[in-house]
Amino acid sequence: MLLAKNIKKKIDGREILKDISFSLESGQIISIIGPSGSGKTTFLKAISLIDLPDSGSLKIDNNDYQFPVADASKIKYPYPNLTVVFQQFFIWPHLTIRDNLTLALRGNIDQKHFDEVVGLFQMTEFLDRYPNEVSLGQRQRAALARALMLKPQYLLLDEVTSALDIEQSHLILSHLRSIAEKGVGIVFVSHALHLASKISDKVIFIDEGKIVEEGTSEILKNPKTDRLRKFINIADQIG
Image 1 (cartoon, rainbow, N blue to C red):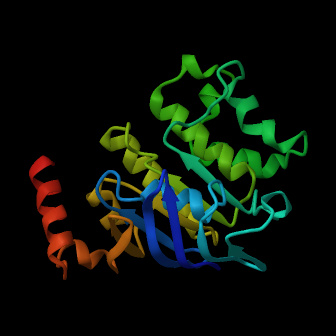
Image 2 (cartoon, helix red, strand yellow):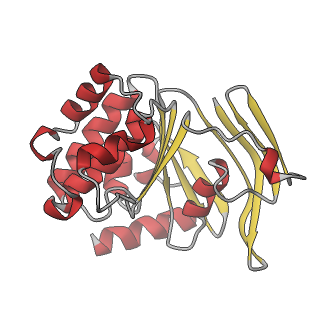
């Protein structure tokens, strides 16, 4: 289990995360929604230890972290057990898609697992092309597949469908459910409420660095707070 308690974070003196607590179990998909600037990406960076929280605690399976830390160089980072995929992809342009997938494996390739992931994301036909020779959706699939090559137990995704069309988004979402069924806990940050409602075991609405409302996807149909209700109404008008 991944368990975060009372996480706080300031950036340039401004409080971005305000006492957030959160838990993620194996095989669970949690969507985090909220307006731009609400702290969603900062939260992912905090619980993945990319940008350490100022205070609070974090437990990732048998590893416990207390913040602030006296010496960041002594932290036992949870990678690759916990892996993050950002919307920028960070695919190496000078390497083929195949080489991008295997680079972090340092030659220790589990061929059966490799073939399984490639098949899951339907990547066989473009494995040996370079990133500039494939579509945006194919690069997105490559970024997700690369993360899965590391066999993580927790997968944190930041707006990974934001640049995809409806068909590509549906493909990614169907794969995420298959991944979760294998026991991987997934956090899915998204502006797309219709995607969150379809994929999530739990939805968390964050605004101004605080969890305003959380529950099953039912909260997107019957919000209890005025703030979530307003957010949903605006999203509906735009959509």
